[in-house]
Amino acid sequence: MAYLWQQCSGGARLILHGDPIIFGLLWVTVRVALVSTAAAVAIGLPFGVVLGLGRFRGRRALQILANASLALPPVVVGVVVLLLLVPQGALGSLRIGFTLTAVYVVQTILALPYVVALTPAAIQGVAPGLLDQARALGAARLQLAVLALREARIGMVAAVIAALGAAVSEVGAVVIVGGNVVGHDQTLASSLLANFTYGDTDPHNAGIAIMLAILVIVLLGSLSLLAHRSGGIRLRFRGG
Image 1 (cartoon, rainbow, N blue to C red):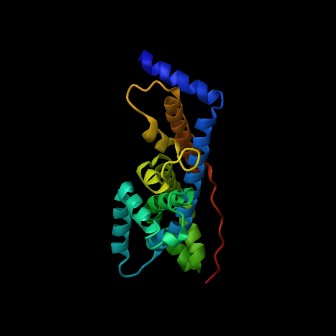
Image 2 (image 1 turned 135 degrees about the horizontal axis):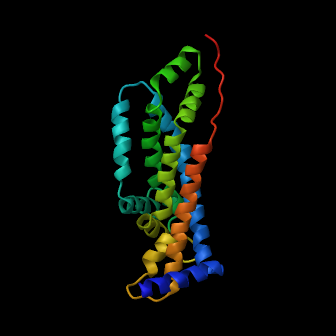
């Protein structure tokens, strides 16, 4: 316990004194998490709404596929993306392999299943009579989608929280496609993977671990508070 306290207190002092290494890693981690989560929401939300509200053949099979994609191994995704981005790969002409942009891409892919799979689940949890009433009152498709998202906002925030949490804590895919370069694309989590060794007395590792825990609590806690305090959006439907 004395050793644990010594490491934690040393790490906390580094954070309080604004250690440039820890805060540099924090900045990269926040950028990766926000950019990839925003991209995943922008891409995945329309698909999730269609799966949640749509009535078409094959919808159930697509939902099963979306749910199964939640179990995608991050390391496998990282390897596939890297093979596409190397000079000999199909997307090699983009020249983004081993860059921060590649990290954005792989993290977006890993966050996307949470949005696509959890959005329809949240929408389908809305009282069926409410959406049927909106249809009867002449709600357009866009109005119906906004109403469904508003009523399912707690579930939607849960989807964003899951995607953001995956983006913050993922390590394997980041190391594979980005190269884990210090000061460039190394995140808090990937730095711990690269630098921590048993018996290491460097307080930076403890400080990085503490900062990662603080980041998760602050980001995800803020989203949870936002979900409970949101008043929603009022809509008006055209009369039939």
